[in-house]
Length: 102
Image 1: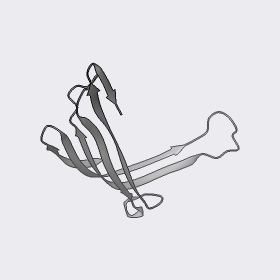
Image 2: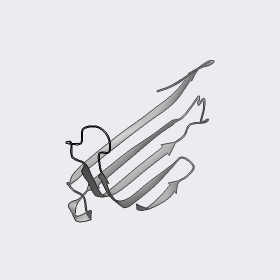
Image 3: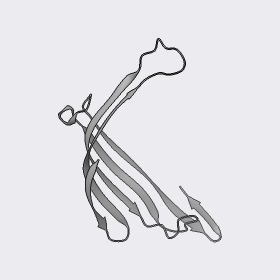
Image 4: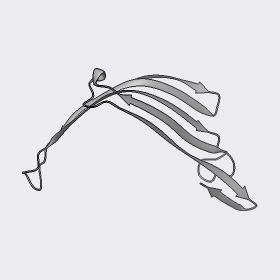
């Protein structure tokens, strides 16, 4: 994988790049009549990550998350073309001595 990126202040980063993976699986135990398989992928990807949590272990304020996009292409060596978008995040909240992250 090769990518380029930049920091976004002290709260995040933005990266974009290209990757290629190639592998084969061969069954060594179990039912030998089930064939092995190969995995081939080449893709462009872009990722935005952010983290404004005040502490790592027990945060009381802030949020963190990631938004990523990938586009796999046969032109880059992939077995199939596909495109995907993935997002996740969580927020820390506190009420008096109680802290929640969700």
